[in-house]
Length: 427
Image 1 (cartoon, rainbow, N blue to C red):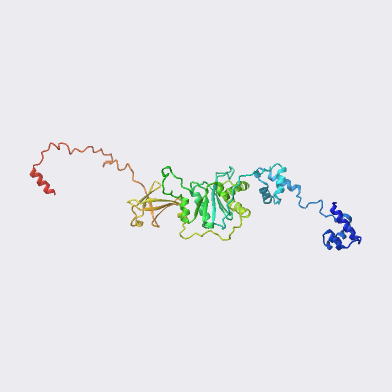
Image 2 (cartoon, helix red, strand yellow; image 1 turned 30 degrees about the vertical axis):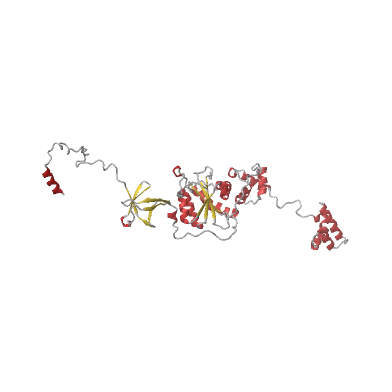
């Protein structure tokens, strides 16, 4: 019994023996008169121990040792190797229906040798840029080449697009960090959310045209990349980050994914690109939405809807400019394409046309804003015209040097009058 309990007992006994009123006892103990009456009743019935709380010495928050052993057994398995206390507590709820605070799990893991506290180091301080005010004003876009499947399947890449104002995330696994794969992810984003005001990326070659040596010192601007051209046609701005720290929001999201997403894919036993994307869409992105997104400063959505002029199949394809020859053909990718006769129009010869190579492999040609039909033509054989064949099917002998000049100077020349007559007759 503590000193506070003893003082409380003295005041109650005085009230019991009528040496002070119940009101005075309540004021001294800083409780209500009703509580004083309850305590006096317990004192008469149970003696001095009545003032002690009934749960003293017993903790209703203490978890059974059986549950602790169950949790340690689960976390000791190879499947949960590398889990931190926070993520481990979440999976204990998800897999074992065991709700335990992360601090309790941290204590258990430390005791079992599954977790070692790391000293906090003072890192270089970077001033964080303020978030944009509206959802869709700025979207950070990047790719990670981490070993997402931990050797269980093919090498895959994770392309992420994270909103700067809310940290809302869109992501897809792909097989390569190519222009075509990035355009495919961009198309999914645009169809789901609309057109953001600006994208924020690094200076990778799919976003920035690399200057060549023969362009050094020239004043003309470099042509945009295929993605740069597509963003211009969609009316979406583009900002280049000069360092990884500049696009810190998407970089930090990759750090989180390399912990949570990798372990989630391991638990789900994902081995293929399709299985990884299925887990990403059904589990990880909803979990991210619930845990890591924030409310934007302004409730307006800055995304703009796609218009009728935004043909994503055409815009998000590989576009080149070619010249129509005099016979109305176009040379593209080592092939020759002939414009169909019914689609031939004036001003086509020597004119420039837009040739679109769609991601599905289709070739489309557009002249002055309208598409024209084309047909592939086989080039003429180079050796066919060199060798002439005789009627019997045998190769004809070479003609050799002409003999008309033989004896030319020995022939008698015509007289002057005869030469004049010949000249007048042919004039």
